[in-house]
Image (cartoon, rainbow, N blue to C red):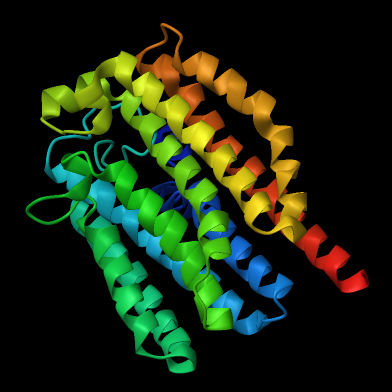
Length: 312
């Protein structure tokens, strides 16, 4: 009996491992990259405060963690996440966490984000407070509330806006006090790739989402139309980079992102393949990898442009 009990204990993950899975820290690159890019552009413009950038980064990660937890809670509540769900975060369904624990943890994460946001507000003024409150609301109402954004085909628009435009341009504004076309063009590619990552998830989940009554662009467009949307999102990311280099030739090093085009090409081929369901998990995972690779290359490009500007 003791041996059998020890086997069960060995198979059961520890509490830390469970919460690690719950907050999904591997997804935090989607929050870190935009803050890093907005800060790098501010550095290029000789307007950079390191501790303020760090506080923004921590606040954004806390918001992301809260959003992940809230999404899991409300997807479970609405019957979208089940034992048949293709993803890897079925902690409630597996009995590892209770729904109440998950939503309380989400509230704590949002509270931490709010407190950190107040530090930023104290340095920059009320416009950032308004922006932070709207961002928190978007994170919550993505799957929460009576009309969740993610359930009425507004998922891609939401993440493009708040994990692309708002995060990059907001961080740039905090550090410089300005909103510029350049900051918008730095933000847009990351927004498009974040939307592509979400769309890859929705392409995989078309059958289950239709059964659960969840409406996404993928369920509306169908697999064929969804494939073309995926291609559009990746193409738009590169088009925005070229537009940035045209608007400000001093930022030409950002075109180093072209090094990731072969990866993007392979992902488009995978999207247009006959793969379905779990077989599309690689598309989801590798799109997240493209976001990280593209964002890192863009960051290198901005820092290189800064070095060139300083020495010339």
